[in-house]
Amino acid sequence: MNKTTALIAALGLVAGFQAAVAGEITGTVTLKGTPPKEKDITPLKDDPTCGKLHTEMPTTHFYVVGPKGELADVVVSVQGVSGKSTGASAAPVMIDQKGCEYIPQILAIQTEQKIQVKNSDPVLHNIHDLPTVAGNKEQNMAQMPGGPELSFSFPKPEDFLKFKCDVHPWMFAWVSVFDHPYFAVSAKDGTFKIANVPAGKYTIKAAHRKAGNATQEIEVKEGAPAKVDISLLPCSQPWRLSLCWPWAAWSPAMALAWLCQTGPTLTDTTCSSFLFLNGSGESFTSTLTGCWPPPWVC
Image (cartoon, rainbow, N blue to C red):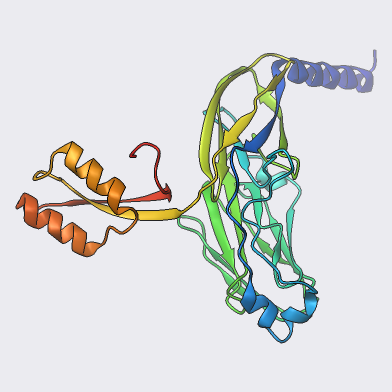
């Protein structure tokens, strides 16, 4: 056996070993319930240039749902997996600006993986990323019609990192960044596939920007496919609450009843009332986001 033949054989053994110890996770994400009605993007249609690119009133695409509840644009990831990012050598991911909208609006990449942004519109855009994790760089770059592609990458993991266009304020996209390759974004039929997952027991997380998160436990066995189906509930009314703590003057039952009756109207004035009632002069403020009413409260 010459050296070339030996090398080919060795590579074949390595590939076979990797296939034997890696598995595949597939599944479908569905929405249980009726999604909220999408909103008209009136400023887009009224724009003298962008409006001409649409024959009908454009709408938001928060919930892309199939006839049987199949939910698209859900970022599905493996939690607690041991693996390093291969983003530096991975193929770039493309975002297009077409019809004065970002396409796609939801995507996922690895750390250091490139995002290439192109402008297919006959208008000027600017691409402005707004990371919230330290180490991920904010950039704001203009792009002429048909101009050179712009490149973005991020060294730190981050969920739903926002991109926007300051010229056209209705334009948004969200990018989830992972420090491993074990994730996927559900397709229009709700399906997803995560390949080459090392054997082991994991938590699968499904994250939707409006419907929230769901998790499920799964075991991946050597060389065997694993299937997991995940359901999410629609968010009927987004809420954002700033709660002051402690509620020393209120019993838990009183606070719970007040919160469920009041709904998403907690304000700084409310917090001041809490401080006045408990008389402690100390507070801890916690901001929560999700759907109203939150099932863990009411």
